[in-house]
Amino acid sequence: MLFYALKRFGVAILVALSVSVVTFSLLHVSGDPAAAMAGESASEEDIEYVRKHYGFDRPLPVQYADWAYRAMHGDFGQSIYLKRAVSGILAERAPTTMILGALALSFALILAIPLGVLAAMFPNTMIDRFALTIAVVGQALPSFFFALIMIIVFGVWLRWLPISGHSSWLNFIMPSIALGYYATPAIMRLTRAGMMDVMSSDYIRTARAKGLKPRVVLFKHALRNAIIPVVSLSAVQLGFMLGGSIVIEAIFSLNGRGSLAWQSIQRSDFEVMQAIVLTIATFYILLTFLADLLNAFLDPRIRVS
Image (tube, rainbow, N blue to C red; front, side):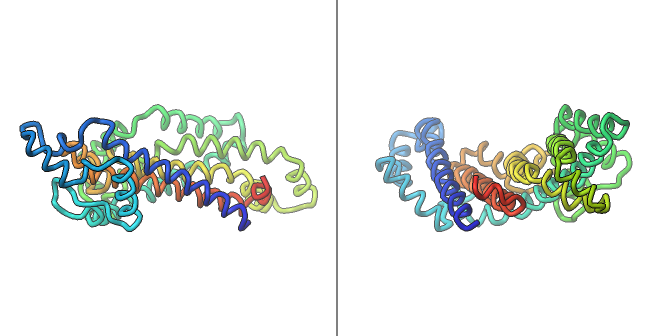
């Protein structure tokens, strides 16, 4: 297990290094960052001052090494627009996005896994068709449109839930459902396919022949093996939710990293944009690494692959 963990950790480090290079390069691919930061009406003297002030006149490898060293120590520079440390801004916005992502993934798992199990236990029945219908609707319905429908129904007509802000846990109900419902179909279908494949295995027939209780066969033997690919998919989906929550946060006026990313793009606040991309990508890599370890724990065969 230790060797497998070290091997996966080495891969994660290489991926993180590649992501840092791509993230740093994004600042220079779009053009001269000094001219963009100085503004359209800036003179050549102003642009040159910005270039020297932020170190854009140095060789790119030197700029990257300095930026990467500071980023590893939690120093992402200063926001051009807000005139504050980027790390402090991210720390203020992170809890809202993290809570939203965790609740959205929890909703998706709570809805998708039971539906997938029931659909696999009763294939080609009304239960199976009902689960597949929910999956098809979730795949076809855009998150922003579903969010607007919930706002109209539960926020405007029924007045059950608040439609903006993040002052109460009630503010996260509709955003979490809107963001999590989009991930439900993939998790449900994977659970269903995994359960149907596992239930036809020889060791399940052996467990039944030994007289084990149906719930023991289902949860201890079948679901434990069928859930392994769902763990990896859930890590991917959580990373997607954290990175793709911009629209949902904007609709519900949640002051998280998603809205900060959108504001930074509008303001050409490059330091903040770089930090957001790097932190979300790093968190995504960490989630994948932890999912690999959990899968290796659930299935010892993975450790020797």
